[in-house]
Image (cartoon, rainbow, N blue to C red; front, side, top):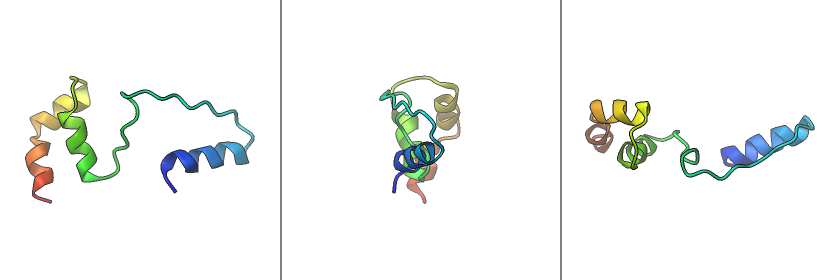
Length: 64
């Protein structure tokens, strides 16, 4: 079960209104090393992206 399904189930279990927003900038889950690579290579210049590039995460992930 993915994180969206888990969060949806938890919200329903507690009778919390849930609204799903589909936004490309928010849609990337960072729970695997390759996810960091995707974020680093994605267009943009967020603070996280700049840090990942500064740390050469692309080279580091390729070594894992």
